[in-house]
Image 1: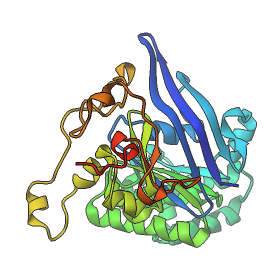
Image 2: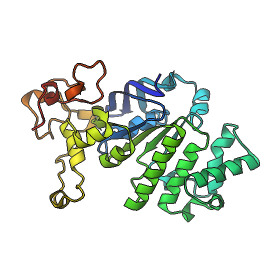
Image 3: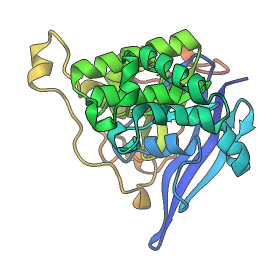
Image 4: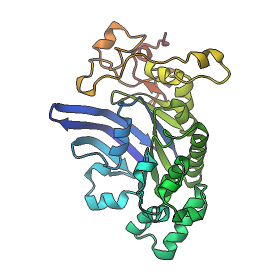
Length: 331
């Protein structure tokens, strides 16, 4: 049984102007000790998907499908059961630690709070566990006496990781955990997350717009566009040989070290993502796609097996592109 399994998950925001679909029929799975990366531009639905895993979306969000955590559907849990699951079984590393941490409370008190709420430790035991967690993420124990404004951005992000680990959860969801950090600190935080996941057998779902970061951190990648997964597979395979034009555009947007041509003129993607309230028919990517066919504007698409995966009961690399279905290489 998978640690986490998403079955046809959809999220719709209700508004005065009508319903707006943000996530449309996403099905993914995550094994214990595995890292899954979810990539896409802003507005692709990846953060909405991340927040839905622990029912952290606002009240105007309608979530359907199944989100199974150790076989139990998060969407049908009572509030009492959900409170017991949050932090203890699954925790979240937010995108901006500066906004997620309480500015008027000491670091140690905030790390210890999940321990007290779940009855795992109080008093001296909670302080010892807090010191242990800070050292685990590369911060001295005395930092527990400080406040968030006394820490750098990278240190605050490490505190968020320590909080996520406090109750020894089996699943961590990291929503753009390094977006606001410089390259050097980003590399340190990513290395920390990788080592902790490997050392503790934790399942990790990492959200990012940076395909190269996910490829270096995660075992598998899912690329989202307009609320749907358009490509999924082993991370390095998707990064190096993306078979959906959108996945390829994300991968080629980053310059290659040692290649002056890519450094001076990295390839990008023209246009903007579609309005979720007015999605185009057929393949949602076709108005921006450089290799679209006439049929792309009307025919429905689904995830088809790529290359050597064809014919297998469960393909490891799939892409929602008519060129994949027709066994053609992307021009």
